[in-house]
Image (cartoon, rainbow over all chains, first blue to last red; front, side, top):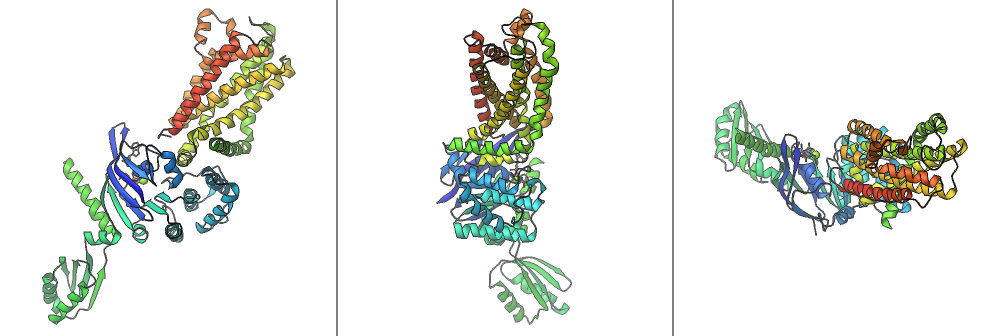
Length: 322
Length: 251
Ligand SMILES: Nc1ncnc2c1ncn2[C@@H]1O[C@H](COP(=O)(O)OP(=O)(O)OP(=O)(O)O)[C@@H](O)[C@H]1O
Ligand SMILES: [Mg+2]
């Protein structure tokens, strides 16, 4: 089943200084069991998109089916099947941790006896054990964030929306969260749609990534494909001083290399990624009797992708404005 | 059925905070009791003030409406913090009906008002109020309807304004003329014609007068009919407004 199927979703706000087009016509499809990452610079429209998909905001245009229910005609059906963790959280600082979790479970229709073990299990997995009797207002930022996440997951929804879930989490908690999210998918078959500013997180966790900027989705693809699409591998080759001209010739002569840059004995260039490309480079160097001192290959990171894509679009906008 | 369960769930949750901060219930009682003790005795010299029934039968109903206006009427203040901390938005993503989200809170206010009203009536009886059980019971029903209306209205105002800095001045400046024009402290029978006419745009005036008649053992009067009709309509309209606000995206 398609868990999210949105067409032309758009939302504008009336602000004092004029209309803000926060989201301008987003089409997206998320299949059952996918973990999809939603990236984009501040103000791109990620939260606005999530708030529309979770029935909190009425789209100014477009339609969507979420978890099999129509967003506009059956919002209650949508709400029943989703969990949402807002960017700013939603726990009541005046309440005690255990009470808040119990209330949330019961609001989703669980009985007290059903909710008890579920909450205990979740608290354990998200590192909230031992905090049950604490006042929420007294939790640390990261503990509070883990509680927000627990509140969104307590009813085991088949579709989960997480808006920057790992903000404020330490590395251990982040890993715990990733494990938990993977577990939700692998054990319960849940679908997860999460926004994040951590590219390593998107890379480690997501099957597919959407990059949004200025209210529109720029690209969507698997993390690997995105990396290939943008830049290729960064290769750093070091040779003896006498070999530099020959090595440079070889590199420039190969198919799929570009941006060749020589400093001293070091030659840096980009090469299309394939598992055989290094072998070919080595062979070509061998043929000219060049014996490299060292060779290093770096896969592009999502940061490269992100900067290239959103940097381009920012440049395009300022060009348009000028 | 589901809605009833959810309403009770929200109510129960809200009530826990009330019990945690018992002081606010007591504080809410201080002013009305002071009015009874320090202002009521002044009126006994005024006799029937142009109304059927004695001074306490005229004055205690005013204090009850005062209590609803300044208690339930201000409850929207407390929801602003919940809007800001994202609690309301979190609740709005759950399948719980908007009616339950609103009414759970309204019922808490009404419950507090009910307890306070009983105390006020008891103090009144000690001071010399004469009223029979039927009169008191029907009066309490009107107070409950008024409390429901004011709580729902106040909550939607809090949700819509989202800022204590706007809510507090707006409400204090609105409630003073509402209180004066309802004839809460002194009945409008003492008013010059223009003031009497002006006070008729204020729904609370009809409710105070109805409660006065009920305390004076007069059940089949126009005032009782008008007051009952006004409080029912007011409650229905305000709850409808409240539900709209809770359903709206700005919440
Ligand atoms: N209620 C609102 N009224 C006016 N403008 C709004 C409102 N909500 C969002 N916006 C504007 O819409 C745009 C998109 O905001 P949104 O919160 O969706 O961004 P985001 O991608 O989640 O950013 P971030 O990474 O900072 O969380 C921003 O320019 C924001 O100022
Ligand atoms: Mg955001």
